Every structure is written in C-alpha cells, then in structure tokens.
Image (cartoon, rainbow, N blue to C red; front, side, top):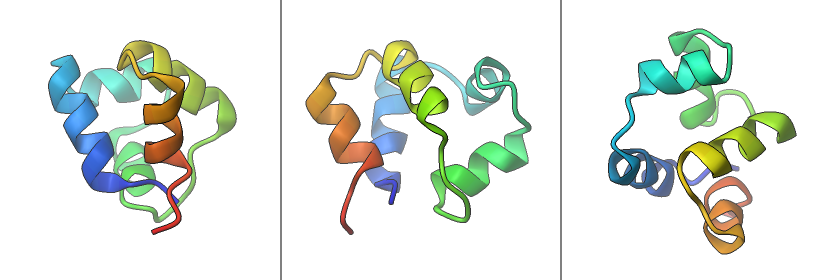
Amino acid sequence: MTDTLELELAITRAGITKRDISKILETSEACLYNKINNRSEFKASEIEKLKKVLSLSEKERNKIFFSSK
C-alpha cells in the first residue's frame, strides 16, 4: 500500500508536477491519481522510475511504496 501523504511530500520536495510524473511513467494523470490514492497499484518499474525522479533513498522508497498502513 502506498503512503499517500509521504508520496505527496516527496513530490513537493522534488519540485515536479504530477503531470510531469504521469508523462515519465507513460500513463494518464487519472491513472496516476488512482495509484497515488491506492485505487490501483504502482508497478515495480514505476516505483524504480519514481525513486530516481524523486531522489528517494531505499528507506524512503520502502516507507512510501511498501507501507503497512
């Protein structure tokens, strides 16, 4: 389960828009919002792209994308 709040904070810190992220992930903005809000899941390849784009450490990546909330 994705920690929505932590992901939103990481996006804000990176200074990138969700529109840009959807382009990087080659998906629609609606699909991205569904993934951010846990209506669908991020693929492993998308998580790796986001880790790079948002400059996440392994610990941050795990906290955001593998949350037990």
